[in-house]
Image (tube, rainbow, N blue to C red; front, side):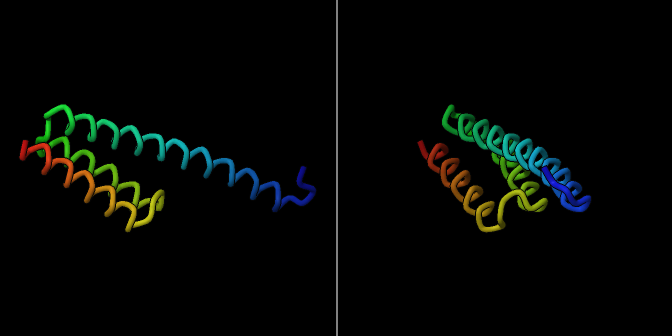
Length: 87
């Protein structure tokens, strides 16, 4: 238990950030999963890819994931889509 008021405030802020980050990560994972299953299921259309890209870009913009991580996710989605389209 924090004795100092500023430490108590910091704890409250950390809890809020943690909740926000967890929710954002969950949304990101769900969107990536939907995009991957859509691509694997033969629905490799531009909308599926665009929605996946959008969520990844928003996560990177808000600092949820790093920019290079976002680019890596997008590259892998694009490569999977290209492979699915070739089949």
